[in-house]
Length: 494
Image (cartoon, rainbow, N blue to C red; front, top):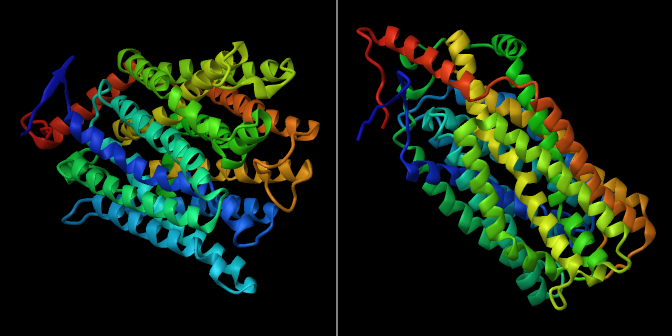
């Protein structure tokens, strides 16, 4: 049913709660594949027989390629109009391509040794094309789902819950079930993991398509029929150069994503829990313990965003994340035996570790989630200035810079572990802790994530699209739509 919600004289295009919840699953559908790819290093090095530094470089290069093709994907999104809408065809085709690429990637070991490198590179290229199609639709689709400043932050609440399922429950599933079942990262383990991921991602994609179906119409694209067309890459470049808020948000989001990616690299988790603490299964168990507190943090940050705006919520989360990551360092420097962090005999060190883990994972991850609705804000800001609707290009610009920066994550990990003596194989739970390995763990798990978040927070201080500014932006768009429709009529929300 069509509804109009007016606040301060502004008519907002609002979504139903279930529509936001369903469409957010599009991000989950790709995140669950991202979780799977996090273990690719163990498959490529341990089963396909590729060298550690080579594997990490390949993963980094694949992300660079993803960034390079993103502008083309954005152009496709902005130019796409079908009877099924702009976003739904891209979501479905992207998910299908991702699934196909995963099957290709994890059959590399079946090929003759001389063909494996070429084949896995080809498979990763296919994977990144599908990944870009589906993830770009997640970012750009926020603009049509809702433009209400009180509703857009709800994406974070849903995405936070879904990410807990993917990364926390997923880690427990791998560490406490699959590794326990198969003993190590064997091909049997990967077969079961791949099947689970593919089934879940397909279900999430179907629900996402349902969620955006009634909003995926031209009347919700920018100014509707009166939207100014952007037909060339030169025009896109002029838009990018003239939008300072886009530039600031892109830098901030990229640095936050790099730090977050480093902390979630599967190798880093193995090193932290399996080698430093001496109990890899603890990663999954502590993950489950922190589920509720992290969800409460997510809801609290969402509440801040709805009351005071996305910018303030981003800054608050980033600064708490910086302090939380840095606090791990003195904990481990002054702890004689890190293996005392255990749930079998809970002491001060265990309690402090769980607390810091909760704060760093909860607040450290919040800015990454907040960025998605903030991209929609930047897109609306451009529409209010120029009348252009370039949500597809804006979404993929973020992915472009994001991928170029986060491509460093597996490369950094690969070179750091190689520098401490693991050039032929990644550290596993059977390796012994050495002073060099301890330094590598501190650097990868805590120091670098905190530095990245610090840069993100400083950059965000110069970003101007706060709650008040976004109300002005939506009011400007309302006036433009009213003039275009004649007689002051405004479009209705579904």
